[in-house]
Image 1: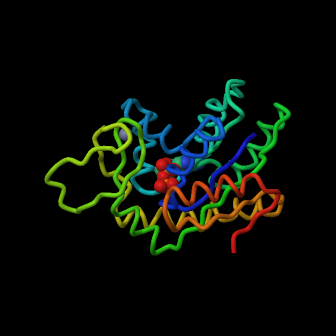
Image 2: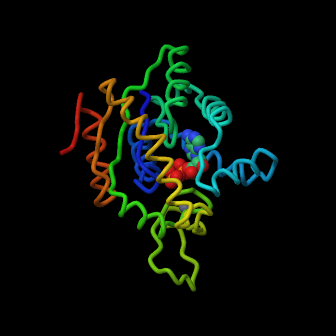
Length: 220
Ligand code: ADP
Ligand code: ZN
């Protein structure tokens, strides 16, 4: 099974993808995490990626497509893969379809997590991410005298360089112009599963798991 998880920055893709992948035994492939790992390596490619991400721009398609497709191993130990953050534009979606077709596979479902723009900005501003396991968290206070720790693994939490108001606005602009057409693309193919992403993490995970089991599902 190959599932894509779609939604704006801050919609909760990473958190939900982690939960869903674990429960459905899918390999979780997160483009943003892959890119941040490359930045950490500090080589020339990492430097280029860092610049794009800092500005809230997409990484060039040639780089993105190559990196993600290389990561998609068709490993038989899993039931398939859950792609988080990719595809983010139509060119990437078509490249993915082509690569899957060569292996006689298709995207089964595209899960769209819907969250209002106001809520997205609020979440991104107070978001912290674990250095160790990459899981996102919400900062409980803006003044962090004491370093808060990850509730999953105890690792240090940090604020992503692109979680500032200016970059957030740019990322949302890119999302509306480049990624919304991807949502339409899967909708036309009858693969879109839409879930309201506002509410508790656990309830949303349950709603997603239930709706992925149905043939067609659009939450009202
Ligand atoms: P978010 O969804 O909160 O923006 P991600 O971690 O998924 O966070 O992505 C962070 C950044 O990584 C994006 O703003 C973009 O610069 C880059 N990126 C991630 N996925 C892609 C992609 N599929 N194509 C191009 N750039 C990407
Ligand atoms: Zn952690």
